[in-house]
Image (cartoon, rainbow, N blue to C red; front, side, top):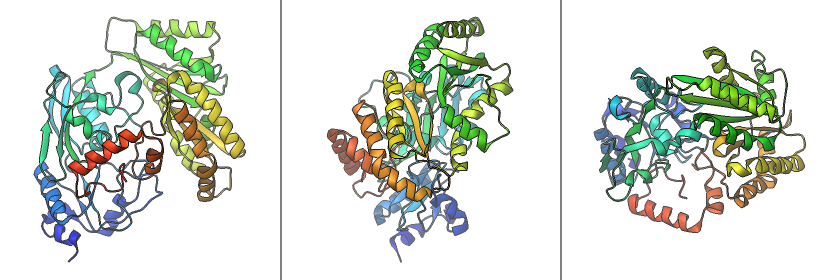
Length: 469
């Protein structure tokens, strides 16, 4: 009997899935570029069952791969090809344990789908400000494990900035639990932060307490044509000054990204009469019923036009029009797939150097691959740009990717590094970015990560081959 089979024999049959037709959904990554193997998927229903699984795996030294919604872009939740790892899905642990409107907090199990947790907050007339393109399928445990970003980081921060408490099953099966939703708790090391962004390599997150905010009573959404890329930082600064930090989202969309989308989805329409090479989707929101946000944004746009920073712009006149604006932004990845896929670069630099990065990185791509299409978009209000490259028509994506990653990609990553930026703003590391981490991370950081891994997971059973090689 194999080690994995000895573990499975100790577990309740109700939580073990061996049907390979079902398992296949858990072994292929979100982008369908990597497929691993596993003898079984385990779907625990309680924290005690998670502990039972990990204790059995630790005793037999069987590696396991925690999985939420399997939406990682870096194969962080995908098992390896050897077939010796067990996948642990938290999908059955999907309940709200506590929602305290007066405390503006919610405590939920890690398997809750993000949009379901958003709905629970909305039912209490509150807002969970974490918002992602994959929120219909990603799960909050995965969001925590990858420290997800999204479209509201500008105002509310990354996932870790929303966390008040955490519950984690450690690699020996013991439980770390500090779920009290306190905003002030100065009692030693902030241990919970170790597990946020660790991609399941230090333990399995089973529950979390999160900050909520008051639901906006006014929301203004505008689609703007920017005069030039150098104007983006100036427009953001003016918007934040005018609205008193009410800006929740500031999303950049290049004309090439928008054109890719409109060709892929002809039912969509360009929202402006005047076209530009650069667009911004701006959203401002306030919970105040007294402040007049509409007048504030109107005054802001008048100022921007007067200073020749905008070519054109429109404000959503209805909820449907706001949805249409956001659909343009959120459908760009689908358009890239329609055109054969893309090589993705998840870059962050200072907002003050973002325009410079885009211009210089564009020159790198133009020199290396003249026929490629650049799809540039992202959450530029927080310095994050998705700098993606779509190969020329009729080009084999695999061959193109190999050449590009050998010739052009290192120059793009070097550029981000020398600008004080990073190659991974919000996607994480997983398996696919291990070499980049080893190349660009500070040696002291890598050493500390290895020490933590060795101390907490000495048998290296937790999501092996991810983050720490």
